[in-house]
Image (cartoon, rainbow, N blue to C red; front, side):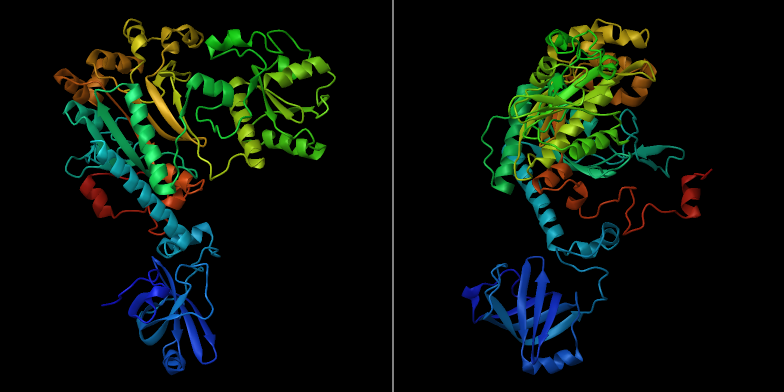
Length: 612
């Protein structure tokens, strides 16, 4: 027997017990005739005491960091207790030991405050996984997985696996493709999601399905993306949107309770996509803090049914005399609480921040709404005090606030003011990792207009149903767009999707929709996306055919499992919660993958590589 107990198990109540421990040497501390060794395993650390009798043996068999060690001995009360670890009241008086395996000197220290950089730790990921910080992340990931499965099992869902080798139907991100040796010149694709399979399972009568499943997308990476990632993928039959929202609010609240001991009892707020864009500048708003956006000028493009609200805006449709505002498509502002005392240096720094290429604005206008009620602005010569206070009121500014105003092209300005809002929220400590705020965003546009192709593209995916009251609008109108100027007036531009996203702390953690389940409507959707009948049959004939055999109404949702774990763990990067992640170039630096393959494999696949 290699061990009777783990290194995190023993307590003072075990004093006098004979035990055998096994693990990795964390530290070795020699004090004259005695030596202390911290022995570590997955469960914790226990101090070993080697007395004078064993020191001679240690001199002959010296221990090094990360040696694999087995030790027999008696549990003893420590004289110098360590209150920072659960085993800190005891130590093991070692009677005999055995080095099970030696270790080379690790390339970085295996402790929480390691001296290893990201690249080095990823190269030696099997060593990095020994660190407590990483271990806690993987334990949290397992706890989230277990909590989700327990909830779904209790609600009658069944876990059904779906294939990884499927047909390429490029409509979203790029597919990873896999050549088929037995079918020369033909390729599988790795699934971006199990979307069509879970719809087929609904048609098959499995009315509550889920998977914790790998998905694959060949897209540019950043901290919250990986080429392979995990979803909690779910689908239900004979449901409406309200059923989905209630079911999966329950799942996330159950995860909070089981994993974080948080009783999330408040009502989850619901917000339309249009209101999210108006109020926060993006469709996944962080509602842990206010700082809502004020719209100072009527926009010229989208959000048509909001224009009447803005007719009384401070800038209206007329000229202000300030060219930056007059020539802009939109002018947006936020009120930053308690920052009216910002210095010139601080406002200049913010101006430079919005000018960065990642943000892309030409400049920043500020208004200081002083505590005494007076206003001071960088555009004083263009606006009088009354006008400045009108602007301040539009974004709900109060005495003591700093009003920040951006102007320019609508899409860029909206994105920039959203990023500026998040920056100021972070600086003011309003985005706490320990606070969690859920939100449903509803009523997304069903379509987006592709200017490059002069056609509609699906905002979510081509299986999303329009709102029930707009199905006739979609079926009874021609999807063809005459020209770029025509798309805003086209009936399809106002069709809302029967879709929903769950947002947590400004991150989309889940998204789904009620699906199309009638063949006629699905064909109409494909036609709107530019697919003729032949292409529809070639790509999705199996699904259209299945709709002929009694497809039930159904809908579902998929949660970004890695991202949910990262948020619950207080991290911005999903890589911290994946055992063996890729770097930002999509490489596994530990395996040195991707890599070349042998010419024999190319020959078997009948593929010729032509690198230019």
